[in-house]
Every structure is written in C-alpha cells, then in structure tokens.
Image 1 (cartoon, rainbow, N blue to C red):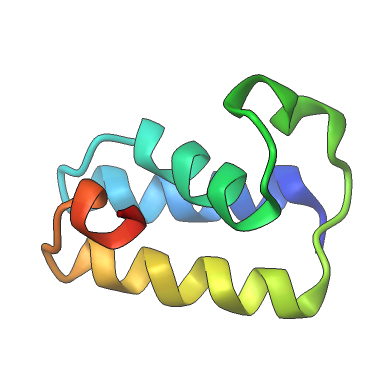
Image 2: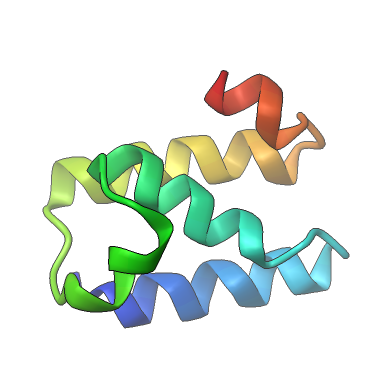
Length: 71
C-alpha cells in the first residue's frame, strides 16, 4: 500500500475520534523503525507492516495511550 494513502486513511479515522493525527505518524515510524521525519521518503509499505500499523492504530482508536502502546 502507498504510505500516503495509509496515512490519509488513518488520520481521517483519528480525526473523527478526536485523536491527535500526529499519532498516526508516530505509529508508522515506529513500525518501520525510521524517524518521524523520514516518513515522506517511504512510498510503499509492505502488507505485513500495514497489518502491524493497523493493529496498533486500532489500539489507539480504542483509547489506549500512544506511550503505552509504543512503550
């Protein structure tokens, strides 16, 4: 999946739930093991990474704090 599409989709969901959209970037960067600023350099995300990102995003959307999710 294209990174920009995943980011846009998750940010929309977070916005609807009144969750800070920046958390999406922290989740993606954490899963990809890159810095937050390197996100714009990543065009595609593997299906395995996409699945992990969505799992973590679901936890965040369920109300779990980002610092507890990412350690």
